[in-house]
Image 1 (cartoon, rainbow, N blue to C red):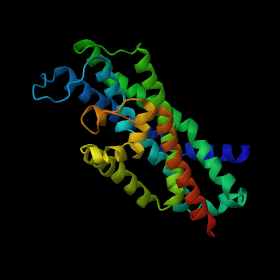
Image 2 (image 1 turned 90 degrees about the horizontal axis):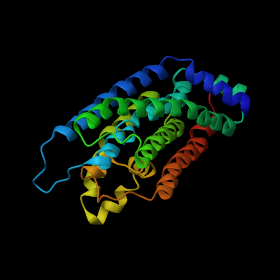
Image 3 (image 1 turned 120 degrees about the horizontal axis):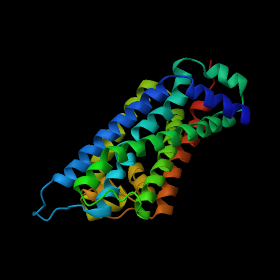
Image 4 (image 1 turned 30 degrees about the vertical axis):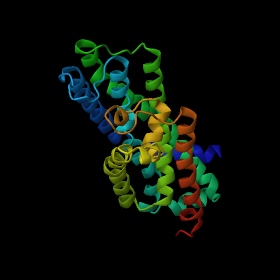
Length: 267
């Protein structure tokens, strides 16, 4: 297992795509974090009965953007770890070196963990750097020493790594690289955000919204931009349940990929 794990890690970091996406992730989240923080500290008080965030609630809502809008990046880099094999027809050589396909897939999944953790560290730092000065200078504070905020920041890093692993699992189900990226972009940027707001708008369906992948990740972190701005009843799944749901998505995708894509003959 160890040789396969080392080989898969080297494959992942030997291309420029991982650091190009990392730079894009940092720039994107720093910008979005600054914009949201600016809107919170300079927006007039809401007199229409809407939600106005203050204090720790405002800080955690902003810092939760690491998952809320940033999870597309680890998903993409994770999917590339698998789909690149099929795009460049290196899957045959990879399976000749490691013919045990379950080991091959397991090595792919585990090899993305350190890269995912790096993505999480950079993403979290970018959100903080973009938003904390505004929250501290013109808002109620950045609360970077508050235990609840520290917990959100640390768990954001962990969840980002989980997204990278889920990306590999998804790539094993949909090995066409272009199709996989299109589906990831469409789901993370349009389908799930719309579904969370739509399902969260009704008591009958609000419980369903909590089990969507991004909502489950918010439950693990313990903060949600979507919930804070009306994307649900204000509740998330308990952390343990949210973690089980998120791991379940990854496990199911990996199992499907192993029984379909990686069961077929390649050549």
